[in-house]
Amino acid sequence: MMLYFRKLFLTALVLSLWSVANAAAPVMVDGEWLAANLKNKNVVLVDMAADETQYDRFHLPGAIYLPYYAIVKPRQKDKVTLPLSDAELVKRLGQFGIHRDDHVVIYDDMGSLNAGRLFWGLERIGHPKVSVLDGGLVKWILDGRKVVNAPVHRKPTRYVARGGGRDNLASMEDVDHASKSGSVLIDARSLKEYVGDTKKHEGGHVAGARWWEWTRAVDIEGGFIRRPAKTLQAELESLGAGDKTSPVITYCRSGHRAAQTYLTLRSLGYEQVRLYAPSMKEYGQYRKKQLKLGTRP
Image 1 (spheres, helix red, strand yellow):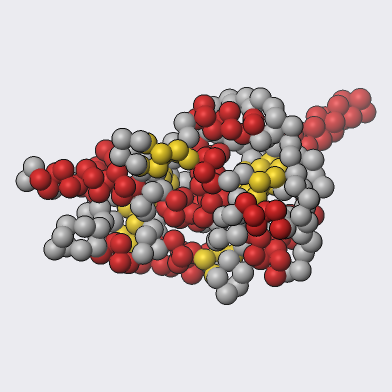
Image 2 (image 1 turned 180 degrees about the horizontal axis):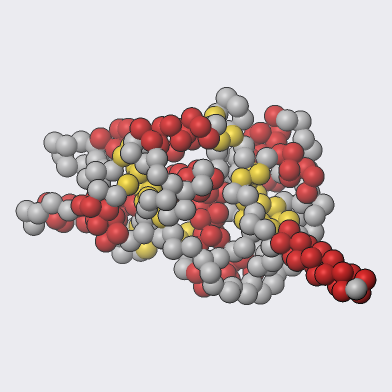
Protein backbone atom coordinates (compact mmCIF):
# COMPACT_ATOMS: atom_id res chain seq x y z
CA MET A 1 0.00 0.00 0.00
CA MET A 2 2.81 2.41 0.91
CA LEU A 3 4.51 1.67 -2.43
CA TYR A 4 1.27 2.46 -4.24
CA PHE A 5 0.90 5.86 -2.52
CA ARG A 6 4.57 6.62 -3.12
CA LYS A 7 4.13 5.99 -6.85
CA LEU A 8 0.97 8.07 -6.82
CA PHE A 9 2.80 10.94 -5.11
CA LEU A 10 5.73 10.81 -7.55
CA THR A 11 3.36 10.78 -10.52
CA ALA A 12 1.51 13.81 -9.20
CA LEU A 13 4.80 15.61 -8.57
CA VAL A 14 6.05 14.93 -12.09
CA LEU A 15 2.76 16.14 -13.59
CA SER A 16 2.87 19.26 -11.42
CA LEU A 17 6.42 20.08 -12.50
CA TRP A 18 5.50 19.42 -16.13
CA SER A 19 2.55 21.80 -15.86
CA VAL A 20 4.73 24.57 -14.42
CA ALA A 21 7.38 24.07 -17.10
CA ASN A 22 4.80 24.10 -19.89
CA ALA A 23 2.48 26.80 -18.57
CA ALA A 24 1.67 29.53 -21.03
CA ALA A 25 3.89 32.58 -20.65
CA PRO A 26 2.21 35.89 -19.77
CA VAL A 27 1.85 38.24 -22.73
CA MET A 28 3.46 41.00 -20.69
CA VAL A 29 5.88 40.87 -17.76
CA ASP A 30 7.02 43.72 -15.54
CA GLY A 31 10.46 44.76 -14.36
CA GLU A 32 10.14 42.93 -11.05
CA TRP A 33 9.46 39.63 -12.82
CA LEU A 34 12.34 40.14 -15.23
CA ALA A 35 14.79 41.17 -12.53
CA ALA A 36 14.03 37.90 -10.75
CA ASN A 37 14.55 35.93 -13.98
CA LEU A 38 17.61 37.60 -15.50
CA LYS A 39 19.80 34.63 -14.60
CA ASN A 40 17.27 32.06 -15.78
CA LYS A 41 19.02 30.18 -18.60
CA ASN A 42 15.69 29.52 -20.30
CA VAL A 43 14.97 33.24 -20.68
CA VAL A 44 16.36 34.97 -23.77
CA LEU A 45 16.13 38.73 -23.59
CA VAL A 46 15.78 40.50 -26.95
CA ASP A 47 16.46 44.22 -27.30
CA MET A 48 14.64 45.89 -30.21
CA ALA A 49 15.55 49.52 -29.55
CA ALA A 50 14.81 51.86 -32.44
CA ASP A 51 18.50 52.62 -32.96
CA GLU A 52 21.37 50.16 -32.69
CA THR A 53 23.54 52.91 -31.17
CA GLN A 54 21.13 52.91 -28.23
CA TYR A 55 21.94 49.24 -27.62
CA ASP A 56 25.65 50.08 -27.86
CA ARG A 57 25.28 52.78 -25.20
CA PHE A 58 23.37 50.65 -22.72
CA HIS A 59 20.91 47.78 -22.60
CA LEU A 60 19.49 45.28 -20.15
CA PRO A 61 21.94 42.68 -18.80
CA GLY A 62 22.19 39.65 -21.07
CA ALA A 63 20.09 41.12 -23.88
CA ILE A 64 20.91 40.47 -27.53
CA TYR A 65 20.06 43.06 -30.16
CA LEU A 66 17.63 42.26 -32.96
CA PRO A 67 16.78 45.21 -35.25
CA TYR A 68 13.28 45.77 -36.60
CA TYR A 69 14.47 45.63 -40.23
CA ALA A 70 15.62 42.06 -39.62
CA ILE A 71 12.04 40.79 -39.27
CA VAL A 72 10.40 42.62 -42.21
CA LYS A 73 11.07 42.91 -45.93
CA PRO A 74 9.93 45.24 -48.74
CA ARG A 75 7.86 43.99 -51.66
CA GLN A 76 9.71 45.67 -54.49
CA LYS A 77 6.87 45.98 -57.01
CA ASP A 78 4.77 48.26 -54.81
CA LYS A 79 7.05 49.10 -51.86
CA VAL A 80 4.71 47.37 -49.42
CA THR A 81 6.38 46.17 -46.20
CA LEU A 82 5.75 42.50 -45.50
CA PRO A 83 6.61 40.24 -42.58
CA LEU A 84 9.12 37.46 -43.06
CA SER A 85 7.60 34.15 -44.08
CA ASP A 86 7.43 31.47 -41.39
CA ALA A 87 10.50 29.76 -42.86
CA GLU A 88 12.42 33.04 -43.02
CA LEU A 89 11.54 33.96 -39.44
CA VAL A 90 12.57 30.51 -38.20
CA LYS A 91 15.91 30.91 -39.97
CA ARG A 92 16.38 34.40 -38.52
CA LEU A 93 15.74 33.17 -34.99
CA GLY A 94 18.37 30.49 -35.44
CA GLN A 95 20.86 33.08 -36.67
CA PHE A 96 20.39 34.97 -33.42
CA GLY A 97 20.81 31.84 -31.31
CA ILE A 98 17.19 31.46 -30.24
CA HIS A 99 15.78 27.98 -29.60
CA ARG A 100 12.14 26.97 -29.64
CA ASP A 101 12.34 26.01 -25.95
CA ASP A 102 13.55 29.47 -24.90
CA HIS A 103 11.23 31.88 -23.15
CA VAL A 104 11.74 34.94 -25.33
CA VAL A 105 11.22 38.28 -23.57
CA ILE A 106 11.24 41.27 -25.90
CA TYR A 107 11.60 44.96 -25.12
CA ASP A 108 12.26 48.24 -26.93
CA ASP A 109 12.42 51.94 -26.12
CA MET A 110 9.28 53.10 -27.95
CA GLY A 111 6.19 51.77 -26.24
CA SER A 112 6.50 48.21 -27.59
CA LEU A 113 6.20 49.23 -31.25
CA ASN A 114 9.05 47.00 -32.40
CA ALA A 115 8.50 44.41 -29.69
CA GLY A 116 4.88 44.02 -30.73
CA ARG A 117 5.86 43.07 -34.27
CA LEU A 118 8.22 40.30 -33.14
CA PHE A 119 5.69 39.13 -30.55
CA TRP A 120 3.09 38.78 -33.33
CA GLY A 121 5.56 36.86 -35.51
CA LEU A 122 6.50 34.44 -32.74
CA GLU A 123 2.86 33.73 -31.97
CA ARG A 124 2.31 33.13 -35.68
CA ILE A 125 4.92 30.38 -35.85
CA GLY A 126 3.81 28.80 -32.58
CA HIS A 127 6.72 29.76 -30.33
CA PRO A 128 5.58 28.34 -26.96
CA LYS A 129 6.78 31.10 -24.64
CA VAL A 130 7.05 34.76 -25.62
CA SER A 131 6.45 37.87 -23.52
CA VAL A 132 7.02 41.61 -23.81
CA LEU A 133 8.55 43.70 -21.04
CA ASP A 134 5.95 46.31 -20.09
CA GLY A 135 7.54 49.74 -20.38
CA GLY A 136 10.68 48.32 -21.93
CA LEU A 137 13.99 50.09 -21.52
CA VAL A 138 12.34 53.36 -20.43
CA LYS A 139 10.53 51.95 -17.40
CA TRP A 140 13.49 49.74 -16.50
CA ILE A 141 15.76 52.79 -16.24
CA LEU A 142 13.16 54.92 -14.43
CA ASP A 143 12.97 52.17 -11.82
CA GLY A 144 16.73 52.48 -11.30
CA ARG A 145 17.55 48.99 -12.53
CA LYS A 146 20.93 47.94 -13.86
CA VAL A 147 21.98 48.46 -17.48
CA VAL A 148 25.21 47.45 -19.24
CA ASN A 149 26.99 48.28 -22.49
CA ALA A 150 28.85 45.05 -23.25
CA PRO A 151 27.31 43.47 -26.39
CA VAL A 152 25.87 39.96 -26.15
CA HIS A 153 26.03 37.45 -29.00
CA ARG A 154 24.48 34.01 -28.84
CA LYS A 155 25.87 31.12 -30.84
CA PRO A 156 23.80 30.50 -33.99
CA THR A 157 21.61 27.44 -33.82
CA ARG A 158 18.91 25.64 -35.77
CA TYR A 159 15.44 26.67 -34.72
CA VAL A 160 13.05 23.74 -35.12
CA ALA A 161 9.43 24.83 -35.61
CA ARG A 162 6.69 22.39 -34.68
CA GLY A 163 3.58 24.20 -35.84
CA GLY A 164 0.67 25.09 -33.61
CA GLY A 165 0.89 28.78 -34.36
CA ARG A 166 -1.91 31.32 -34.28
CA ASP A 167 -3.95 32.24 -37.32
CA ASN A 168 -3.09 35.90 -36.81
CA LEU A 169 -2.30 37.20 -40.31
CA ALA A 170 -5.19 38.83 -42.18
CA SER A 171 -5.29 39.22 -45.97
CA MET A 172 -6.77 42.08 -48.00
CA GLU A 173 -9.71 39.79 -48.75
CA ASP A 174 -10.22 39.26 -45.01
CA VAL A 175 -10.26 43.03 -44.49
CA ASP A 176 -12.74 43.49 -47.32
CA HIS A 177 -15.01 40.84 -45.84
CA ALA A 178 -14.77 42.37 -42.36
CA SER A 179 -15.60 45.79 -43.80
CA LYS A 180 -18.73 44.52 -45.53
CA SER A 181 -19.87 42.22 -42.72
CA GLY A 182 -19.45 44.70 -39.90
CA SER A 183 -16.71 42.75 -38.11
CA VAL A 184 -14.33 44.79 -35.97
CA LEU A 185 -11.53 46.58 -37.81
CA ILE A 186 -9.20 48.81 -35.77
CA ASP A 187 -7.19 51.57 -37.45
CA ALA A 188 -4.14 52.29 -35.28
CA ARG A 189 -2.94 55.39 -37.16
CA SER A 190 -3.26 59.06 -36.29
CA LEU A 191 -6.62 60.82 -36.64
CA LYS A 192 -5.27 62.84 -39.57
CA GLU A 193 -4.36 59.66 -41.44
CA TYR A 194 -7.66 58.05 -40.53
CA VAL A 195 -9.72 60.97 -41.86
CA GLY A 196 -7.55 61.63 -44.92
CA ASP A 197 -8.28 64.13 -47.69
CA THR A 198 -11.64 63.27 -49.20
CA LYS A 199 -11.30 65.84 -52.00
CA LYS A 200 -8.06 64.34 -53.27
CA HIS A 201 -9.10 60.79 -52.39
CA GLU A 202 -5.92 60.47 -50.33
CA GLY A 203 -5.56 58.79 -46.96
CA GLY A 204 -8.76 57.82 -45.26
CA HIS A 205 -9.60 54.43 -43.82
CA VAL A 206 -11.20 51.11 -44.58
CA ALA A 207 -14.99 51.46 -44.56
CA GLY A 208 -16.37 50.63 -41.13
CA ALA A 209 -13.00 50.69 -39.35
CA ARG A 210 -12.87 52.10 -35.82
CA TRP A 211 -10.17 54.66 -35.05
CA TRP A 212 -8.07 53.74 -32.02
CA GLU A 213 -4.56 55.18 -32.31
CA TRP A 214 -1.88 52.86 -30.92
CA THR A 215 -0.72 55.55 -28.47
CA ARG A 216 -4.05 55.19 -26.65
CA ALA A 217 -2.63 52.04 -25.10
CA VAL A 218 0.55 53.67 -23.77
CA ASP A 219 1.04 55.60 -20.52
CA ILE A 220 3.94 57.75 -21.66
CA GLU A 221 4.29 59.72 -18.42
CA GLY A 222 4.24 56.45 -16.47
CA GLY A 223 7.30 55.13 -18.31
CA PHE A 224 5.80 53.82 -21.56
CA ILE A 225 3.90 51.08 -19.76
CA ARG A 226 0.52 49.82 -20.88
CA ARG A 227 -2.40 51.83 -19.56
CA PRO A 228 -4.68 50.06 -17.02
CA ALA A 229 -6.63 47.14 -18.43
CA LYS A 230 -9.99 48.49 -17.20
CA THR A 231 -9.39 51.80 -18.96
CA LEU A 232 -8.44 50.16 -22.23
CA GLN A 233 -11.33 47.70 -22.05
CA ALA A 234 -13.79 50.54 -21.54
CA GLU A 235 -12.46 52.36 -24.58
CA LEU A 236 -12.66 49.23 -26.72
CA GLU A 237 -16.22 48.62 -25.58
CA SER A 238 -17.14 52.16 -26.63
CA LEU A 239 -15.83 51.30 -30.10
CA GLY A 240 -17.95 48.18 -30.26
CA ALA A 241 -14.93 45.95 -29.72
CA GLY A 242 -15.63 44.81 -26.18
CA ASP A 243 -16.22 41.13 -26.95
CA LYS A 244 -12.92 39.30 -26.42
CA THR A 245 -14.17 36.22 -28.25
CA SER A 246 -15.09 38.00 -31.50
CA PRO A 247 -12.66 38.43 -34.43
CA VAL A 248 -10.67 41.67 -34.60
CA ILE A 249 -8.35 42.86 -37.37
CA THR A 250 -5.82 45.63 -36.73
CA TYR A 251 -4.08 47.71 -39.40
CA CYS A 252 -2.15 50.96 -39.84
CA ARG A 253 0.06 52.11 -42.71
CA SER A 254 2.65 49.33 -42.82
CA GLY A 255 1.67 46.96 -40.02
CA HIS A 256 4.11 48.48 -37.53
CA ARG A 257 1.77 50.40 -35.23
CA ALA A 258 -1.01 47.86 -35.70
CA ALA A 259 1.28 45.12 -34.35
CA GLN A 260 1.53 47.09 -31.11
CA THR A 261 -2.27 47.20 -31.02
CA TYR A 262 -2.31 43.45 -31.66
CA LEU A 263 -0.04 43.04 -28.62
CA THR A 264 -2.30 45.24 -26.51
CA LEU A 265 -5.41 43.25 -27.40
CA ARG A 266 -3.66 39.95 -26.73
CA SER A 267 -2.50 41.24 -23.33
CA LEU A 268 -6.14 42.05 -22.53
CA GLY A 269 -7.19 38.49 -23.33
CA TYR A 270 -8.51 38.86 -26.88
CA GLU A 271 -8.12 35.51 -28.64
CA GLN A 272 -9.13 36.08 -32.26
CA VAL A 273 -6.89 38.98 -33.21
CA ARG A 274 -5.25 39.27 -36.61
CA LEU A 275 -2.88 41.79 -38.12
CA TYR A 276 -3.29 43.05 -41.67
CA ALA A 277 0.45 43.43 -42.18
CA PRO A 278 0.52 45.24 -45.59
CA SER A 279 -2.09 47.65 -44.15
CA MET A 280 -2.94 50.87 -46.01
CA LYS A 281 0.18 50.70 -48.15
CA GLU A 282 -1.53 47.85 -49.97
CA TYR A 283 -5.19 48.63 -49.32
CA GLY A 284 -4.79 52.26 -50.41
CA GLN A 285 -3.48 51.17 -53.79
CA TYR A 286 -6.33 48.70 -54.13
CA ARG A 287 -8.90 51.37 -53.28
CA LYS A 288 -7.50 53.80 -55.85
CA LYS A 289 -7.78 51.15 -58.54
CA GLN A 290 -11.39 50.47 -57.56
CA LEU A 291 -12.25 54.19 -57.68
CA LYS A 292 -10.78 54.45 -61.19
CA LEU A 293 -12.95 51.53 -62.25
CA GLY A 294 -15.99 53.27 -60.78
CA THR A 295 -16.52 50.82 -57.93
CA ARG A 296 -15.96 51.11 -54.19
CA PRO A 297 -14.04 48.52 -52.12
